[in-house]
Image (cartoon, helix red, strand yellow):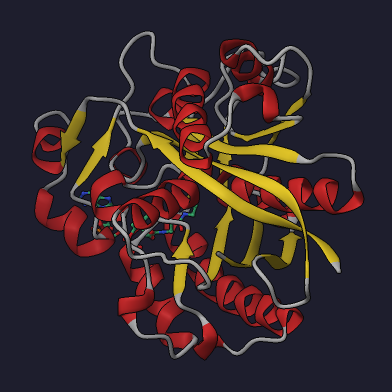
Length: 322
Ligand code: UT7
């Protein structure tokens, strides 16, 4: 018997305000046509005053707990992936803990930008398998609208706000049964200058704004994602053809197409939400996962592959059986 982390429930949350490309084009020198053709994005959600990374994360966590049929006190670990925390410290995970009314648990944030949810899942899985935790809330939540330069059309049209969450639980099972089968993470800090925020507490003392050299990020994303996907499938002892659903980070529809082509995977097996949510950084993978769980595409016993790449660069992938 092997101790594994199994997926017990998923949830998500989006700010109520949806902003179309046409609405953006009223204030930024862009067009619906350009955004759709270059990115596949049609819509994004933008947080209102009072809606924060922690409030969205709490909403998503509540939905995931409901789906798992568990109360908050069942949770002994919260890992929140975010690059847009409510405060520089303490960790937004502790704000979520207090909002959920959990008396005592381990709670911390993980900063790996768009790969943050993969990093958080991998850490939670390690802690569950080692016996350090039994039931974990793993959350990706972001309010990137607050770190965008709304005068820079090359970045401000690409991102949105939102949150996604999963409940993972320990289960003793036979090899090949449900649960996380493999996870692989990578980082290459030499590429800081291609995707970063130009501020921080220890440098400028300001929050800063997002800066990106899009074309270069695009090129690295396609190469790194195909490579880590092949690597993680190898660790799991599976072939790309065994994938039932690929749940990728939602940065650009063209990156999703190129990755599927490299893996010789049918586009029908790729969960796409970038059209509706744009790039929500660490929230994008759990948001897409929750959409496909709730619309019934994902069924018990299926093989899911989650992947992401982002600032750092950081990238990673995770294979699990539902
Ligand atoms: O989540 C982390 C990972 N992030 C990513 O994976 C993002 C990866 N990169 C991308 O998705 C794409 O590179 C972008 C969507 C950011 C840009 O697409 P592109 O096809 O690489 O366009 P480009 O940067 O080469 O720009 C083409 C043209 C430029 O005009 P000129 O120089 O050809 O006259 C830009 O100024 O499009 C112009 N442009 C725009 N035009 C209208 C750039 N942004 C806009 C805009 N509206 N919003």
